[in-house]
Length: 233
Image (cartoon, rainbow, N blue to C red; front, side, top):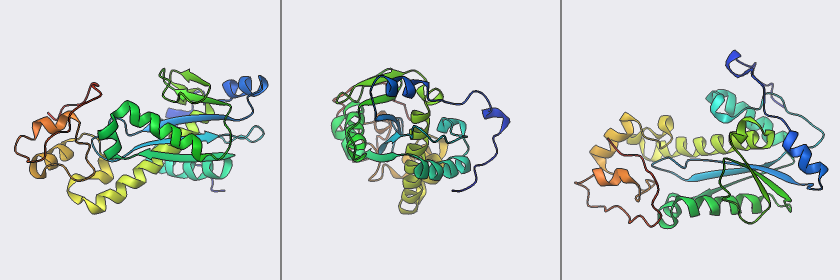
């Protein structure tokens, strides 16, 4: 197993733990999965969700919410999580599914795929946030769960690194959009590329940024699932 990076002072605060997992284990839920998603607010690429079942008898230190880690730290911790966890699954809802279904339904679909991909009957799911987008399992929703639950924090790392790798690969196919840097999220260079070239095949075409591309012959897909969306300018 690769050596973990030293912790920066910024992330030496209290780490996520196993209190919630232990309570569930003690109550008879043998298989507890933490799940987290990434890409919901992106303009391009898939919505990605990871599910992780952590061991009961082996700890992995230096796991943090993925947003607290640098890219190099996430990459290293991703590989350590993959070696350490009992079960790991990653699933996606494609940009086409995000357009067709709406983001809420796409997130539910990705969750179903990730949990099924674990290959084990899950007794309970720990979910970051306050929305039950699982529906098929007993769940506990946890505000800022990626800072509290080790299972969710591990899932946040796996989901983030997996999607980032996909978007870096997409950058080679669509070099004008700077996907390697922005991962499909809004930024000045991404906005300028859209204004100059219009959307590529992995852009989500039901998003509000399409309304600002008046010149393009590609219409915005009708929004069947209204949600607050980021504007182009």
